[in-house]
Image 1 (cartoon, one colour):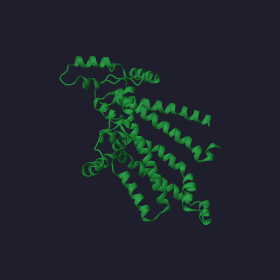
Image 2 (cartoon, helix red, strand yellow):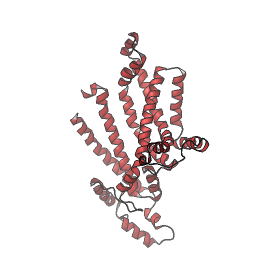
Image 3 (tube, helix red, strand yellow):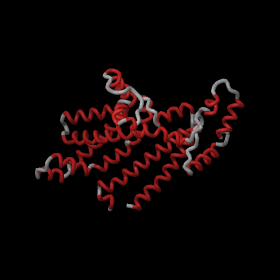
Image 4 (tube, one colour):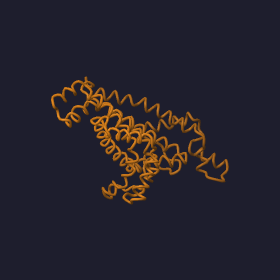
Length: 313
């Protein structure tokens, strides 16, 4: 197991190196000059040149890349071109809302989706199965921002049950924290629920068709233990895989969701940085998100050893 963990960790290095190269080149080869945006309107070319020199943008791209990578290897994500603060500090300041949103979405979505998938597999061909599949199709078809604005209109504007936007830290109380995260979590988690529910249903149907499951039914094993203890456990590997891959949906959806619900998280920080072409912030956030995604998939790979003893062999 130790050797497996070490090999998996080492395999992350080339992935992160490729991500770093792609992120740097895509941002620096894109049109637009952050120095001109910082300078504002009615400025001279000399002022823009001074800003470019101060930010190091007058250097060749390869030299800028080497400087950035060297700082990255020392744990330095650089400093914001506009605010001047270290990028890692800006990310840390915005991390709590984003982590809260991701946590609530993940817990609710995974719990709800697995339950829906198991129920649909147990009632295959019935109206329950059709409802679950209908929700799944809707989750994939409707964009996050459309779901978000629809939830705001119904539950905040019409019914006045939940706040329209904003974020309340957990230190102000659990209920205010949860009320402000309810609508964003539902909007962000709908596609995630749809993805996991469909895979759970498909995998459960495959497991239920196995000979040992038919034997268990013939011996009179109760439905609940058969579904949860035997079938779901044997279907856990594909479900864990799609849960890990679905983290990409959370990362991408966080940016849109935080914008719709005015949550001051990392997603909003990225949107502001893109508008100002603040390279260090964009690069730093993408590297952090990429590292989280790779690490989560590492944990998913390691979880296979818990669900399937054959992997340990």
